[in-house]
Amino acid sequence: MVLLHERGDANGRLIASAPQLLAALEMLTVRYVDLAGSGDCGFWNPEEEPEVIAAREAIERATARNPTPSLKPLVAKGAGR
Image 1 (cartoon, helix red, strand yellow):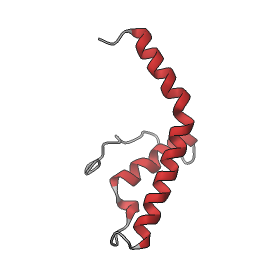
Image 2 (image 1 turned 90 degrees about the vertical axis):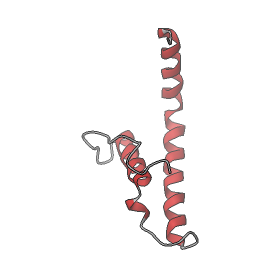
Image 3 (image 1 turned 60 degrees about the vertical axis):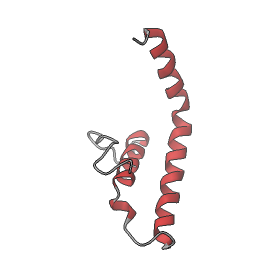
Image 4 (image 1 turned 180 degrees about the vertical axis):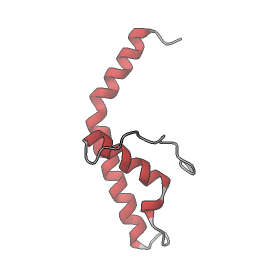
């Protein structure tokens, strides 16, 4: 059982690191989409990938850009292959 103060500490660390996590997710998403578009890894539409969709929804939600009413689970069908 996690003690309440331990959970609070963990939440505090997560909140404190949120800007860095958001920036990293934005950079990784751009890099992934660019790599997929280069043709070096084959050809597919990365915007249809569950991971890219989940990342874009999380970024929108975190930045209030076109906020979605409810964030779909980040473990979307096919995610984490």
